[in-house]
Each structure stands twice: as C-alpha cells, then as structure tokens.
Image (tube, rainbow, N blue to C red; front, side):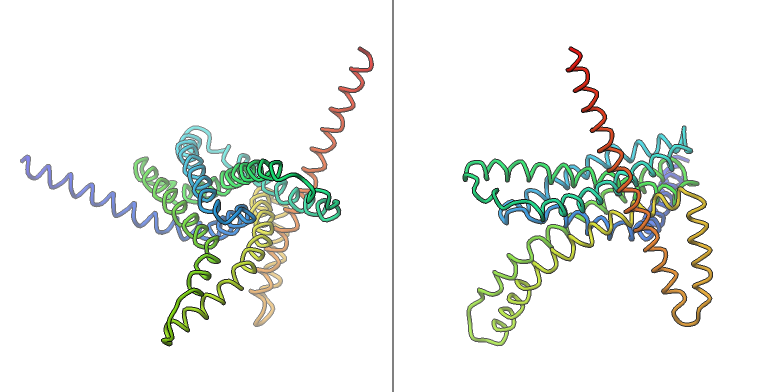
Length: 318
C-alpha cells in the first residue's frame, strides 16, 4: 500500500514537472520578442563604460535584475490572485516610463551635442569622480529599465499559465525569470567584451593557416565591436519606444482597433501585404512611444517649473 502511494506521488511529481517544462517552453517563445528588446537595451545601457569596468557593471545590473524578478514574480502571482484588473494599468504605467526614458535620452543627446567643450578642461580627480557617478547612474538606469521589461516578460509568462495550478505557475515564472536573466546578461557580457576577444585573437603568433585565420577574425572583431555597440545604442533607444508604445497600444482600444484595421487592408496586398502590415504595426508603436514620451517629459518640465515658481513666490512673501 505504501509502495503504491509512493509510486502515485512520484507519478504526480513527474506530471507536474512535465507541465512546467512544456509551459516554460511556451512562455519563453512568447516572451522572446521582449527578450530581444531587453538585450538591445541593456547592451546600450552599459556602453561607454571603461573596458576594465564593463563586466563589473554587467554583473551589478544582472544582480539588480534578479532582485527585480524576485519582487515581480511574487507580486504578479499576488495581483493575479486578488486584483487581476490591475495588471494592465500597471503595465501601461511602465510603458509610459519607458517612453519617457527613451525621449529623455533623445533630448539629452540633442542638448549635449550643442554644449560647449569646456568639460575637457576638468581636472583628473574630478573626471574620476564623474566616471564613478556616471557608472552608478548607468547601473541604476539599467536596473530601472530592466524592471519594466522584466514586468512585461513576467506578465506574458503569467498569461500563458493563467489556468494552471499555483505551483505550476510559480515554477514557470521562476524558471522564466532565471532563464531570461542568465540569457540576457550572459549575451550582454559577451557583446561588451568582443573587442577584448578580437585583440587577443589578433595577437596570436605563428605562421600556420590557423593562426592567420584567427588574426583575421580578431581584426574583424576589433572593427565590428564599435559599430555593433553604436548599432545597439540606436536599437536600444528605438526598443524603448517600441516596447513602451506597444504596451500603450494594447491598452488603448481605439488606437489598437485603428492599427489592426489598417493592417487588414495592407495584408490584402499581394506578395508584400504581410510585411507592410508588420512594418505599420512597428511604426505605429514607435510613433505612439515618441509622442507619449514627449508629453510625459513636457508634463514633468511644466510641473518642475510651476513648483519652482511657487517656491519663489513663497520666498518673496516671506
């Protein structure tokens, strides 16, 4: 009797593990698009860091990402159990934040490009302090951005296992959180160290064809690494608008219906219809992201200006 009970328990555990494996695979496929955006954004966030600080920065952001997911997984399970209606509004707030971050980056670059070059005359000590502060700010910014993208990944995964038991949902979300974190930051670490790999390969000695091939690969990587980082910087900013705008688009029913109607019209065009429909969707999400980010930034600037005037007025009365 005890033996049959043990076998039944083992069979139940095996069944649950099989469900977890299947659902984790499905959830990973559905969140793969966000994973690509996450990779581009995080590689872009750590760009510009000194070579000897690249891996420590990636590790610091990875630890922050794990902490994000340690908060998000229980929060997602709790919200889905007691207030499922709150998931979409919270995601939209996160989407707005991503749009704001993206537009602020564009505005900062525009302002910086018109700034003076007087900063080059700063002392070495001040430059060192500036680098430390800049590195810490990059880490904080990357962790904030990761929080929004992680939330979207967790919500997508949660939707995949919504009908499963609590333990299956918990196992799938935990598995997705670990897989995504290791995958994204492992790739980011590899990307930021491409130039070091190229330099090491270029230094290969010997006259054999293999040594020559390795040196050529090294030279290629050295030329490609800066271009890749610049590309990822641009792609990362676009991804902010695309992900943020996509979240907002799916939360604004009229906008989503309009885009879907136009996609149906384009899809009827022979040969290129499906491609044009996808391009339209992406452009609509990016445009909505840019407009939303601009409005949020303008609102923040107005609020700060109004707050400053109120303080000045109060100081004048005093």
